Image 1 (cartoon, helix red, strand yellow):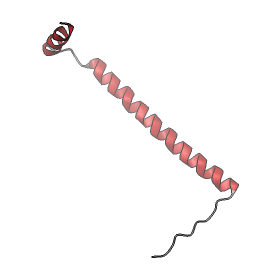
Image 2: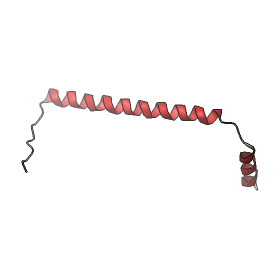
Image 3: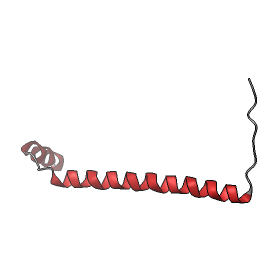
Image 4: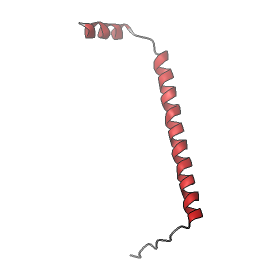
Length: 61
């Protein structure tokens, strides 16, 4: 198998690569935040069923 040649990056390339990776991480975090927010809205909209009331009453005993 051939060995992979490592090509060192100059300072400008390092900065560009860091910015690229940072932008990707920020986009990923924003997507996770959006999903968590949407999930919280769904949870708020769910009605409480009679079974949930019974479960809560049993927990208090």
